Amino acid sequence: MSADVQTIAKIFAVGGTIESVVDFGSGNINDSYLVTCHQGLSTVRYLLQRINDLVFRKPVEVMENITRVTQHTTAVLCNRGVSGVERRTLTIVPTREGREFYNGPDEACWRMYHYIEGTRTHENATTPHQAHQAAQAIGLLQSLLISLPEPPLHETIPHFHDTPLRYRQLEEAVQKDPCNRLEQVKQEVDFADSNREFAGLLQDLRARGKLPLRTVHNDAKISNVLFDGDTDQAICVVDLDTIMPGLALDDFGDMVRTMDVTASEDETDLSRVEISLSLFEGLASGYVSAAESFLTPCEREHLVASGQILTLEQGVRFLTDFLLGDTYYKTSSPNHNLDRCRNQFKLLRSLMENESAMRRFVETL
Ligand code: GN1
Ligand code: MG
Image (cartoon, rainbow, N blue to C red; front, side, top):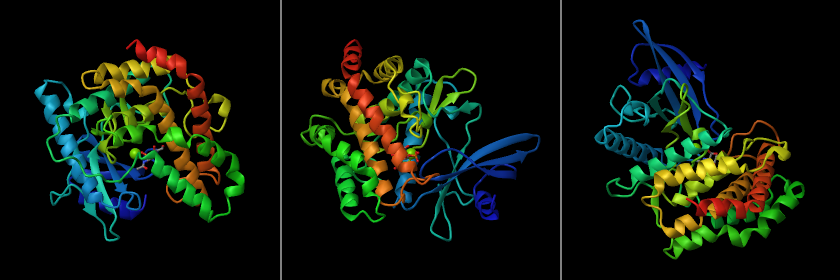
């Protein structure tokens, strides 16, 4: 590990002496490190992250949002007498000067959390129980945020789940084709085009006031939920960078995209990329059990459509980044973004084929 990251870790109010700092996690955007400290005979671990300032242009606002959200969820859970609250929400470790983040000499923004011990993550769901648990955790988070005091959170990435905007960005990338990759992706561009009208459904309902704006997670994939290592119960939702105003269905759609398919979004064997109805049933029942007190009829009615739209949107985003030369998502092979796009479009086809069965199940909830 570079000495620089060690030096940055020391800026934060960690307990004890830093023993090691190692790369950590599978995020596509930020850089994460696990910091291990020794304090007497005990070991304390922390998560140190460098916020990607090309993606998050106003990291101060990101940290303001996270501070408000973690303080609020902690207070509500404590009021409800929930046990082990320190493992159920992230806790920011301030710098030694008492600030929530550190601005490095190169303007990079760093922050630290307590590492939540005894947990693990899943890159994709393998059992209905896991999907149920993870979706319940996201539903619970949304419900806790209903009582978040005014003002609304900062919109840290404006129009984040504005699918029609993602289409316009794709169109621009197709026009410019700066890396001469268009020839390779004609089929994918055609597939995206053929679904353009449907893609605007949620934003259209939002603009017509049919879907309420809420405070939501906005990156509700299964790998952002921590599970207890012993019980496999979902205990904490992490990666709060994009928490901001949005649609409850943006989260539900992202869950459908990542929790009811046993293959991850990096899977290149597309025969493995298929929705599992039993995983979908686990996830939909888990989410509705936590969200039924606030879901409106219009939100319920569009649960299945949101899965299709968010999967389509993600495919469009990967395709756009491929055309632009892989400048947004971290990639580990030349066609990584294109492979991910194909994966998402295959999943969308499977979601469409199974739409009736999914709808029938949702009606029973
Ligand atoms: C990014 O960094 P990570 O993996 O948490 C992205 C999400 C995408 C996801 C696809 C800020 O999230 O929107 O759904 O990759 N985050 C941002 O895996 O763009
Ligand atoms: Mg994220």
